[in-house]
Amino acid sequence: MTVLCLTELEPDGGTVTDASLRALAFSRSLAGPAGEDVAAAVLDAPDAALDGGARAALAAAGVRTAHVADLGEAAGYAPLAWARALAELASTGLASTGPASAVVAAGTDHGQEVLAHLGAITGLPVAANCLTAARGDGGQWQLTRQRWAGSLTEDAVLDGDPALLTVATDAVAAEPADTPAELAVEPFRPSLADGDLTVRATVSAERGGGVSLATARVVVGGGRGVGGPDGFAPLEELADLLGGALGVSRVVTSQGWRPHRQQVGQTGTRITPELYLACGISGAIQHMAGCLSARNIVVVNTDPDAPILAHAQYAVIGDLGQVIPALVEALRARQNPVR
Image (cartoon, rainbow, N blue to C red; front, side):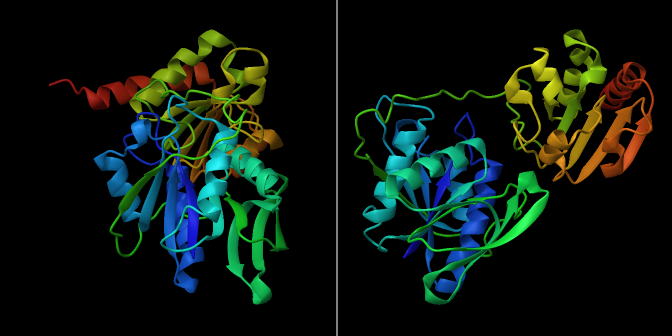
C-alpha cells in the first residue's frame, strides 16, 4: 500500500511548492506507522519530466516514486483531468505497491478542487483541511480538521478506501524526511474521458522575482487605508526589497484596485509567511482567516483600535504614507551603503 500525494511544482518548474512539501510531510505521517511508502503524483510537469531541483526536493521529502503525468498538449491546470489521473493511479497505477490507502493534497484552491472532483468520480467522501489523521480500528480514519475558516477544529471519523484528504496549510511544517529516499520517476499517460480537458488554466510566475503569495516567506499587505490603486507602488517596492509578495484585503479587490489573485483571506489565499506586514488593513474576520498562520504580524495603521492589532506582535500607529516610504528608504540605504 502507498500514500499518494498530489504534488505541484512552482510555475517555473524548478522545485516543489511549499504547500505540496507540507502535504508530503503530512503524507509521511500517515505512511510511517503502517510501513507504507509515499508516492507523488506530479500532474503539471512539462514534457512528463522533472529537473534536478524538483527531483532533489521530492527525494528529500521521502518520496519513493514520482508518477509524472503526460497530458500531451493539455499543459497547465486541468482539475477534472488531474482528478481522473489520481483515480487511475490510486486504483491501478501503483502496481509495485498495490492500490493507495490514502490520497492527499494540499488545502489550496487547486488541491480542494481536484479532490472534490476525485470524490465525485470515485463516490468517496473527502475530508478537507485536516490537521491530523490516523488509522483507527476497523479501517476507519480518526481526523482532526479545521472548520469555519480555521476558527474551530472538529474531531471526525472518515470511512473511505482510499481516504481522500486535504491538508490545512498550517497543519505541518515543510520539513524533509529523516532519511532521503531513492527516487524513481515513472511517466504515465492517464486515460481521460471526453470533457476532462474542457476546463484548463495556465499558471504563470508572479511578478517580483517569481515569489508566490501562497509560499512567500514575507508578505506585505495593503487594505482600504492605502487609499487607491496608486498607493500600492510603495508597498510593491517594499515587498521587492524584502524578497516577498504583495497581498491585499477583499475590499481592495472589490474596488478593482488590485487583482483577485493577490487577495489574502477566506475567499482568497491563505498565507503562512514568517512576516506579514499589514498596512492600512482593519482586520475583518474574513481577512484574518487567511493570515493567522503567519508567524509574525506587524501592523501599520492610524487606528489604535483596529481589530487586527489584537493579533499583531508589533504595531506602528501612524500614517502609512509616511511610514512605508521611510522604511523603503532605510532598506535601500542598508542594501546600498554610502562608502
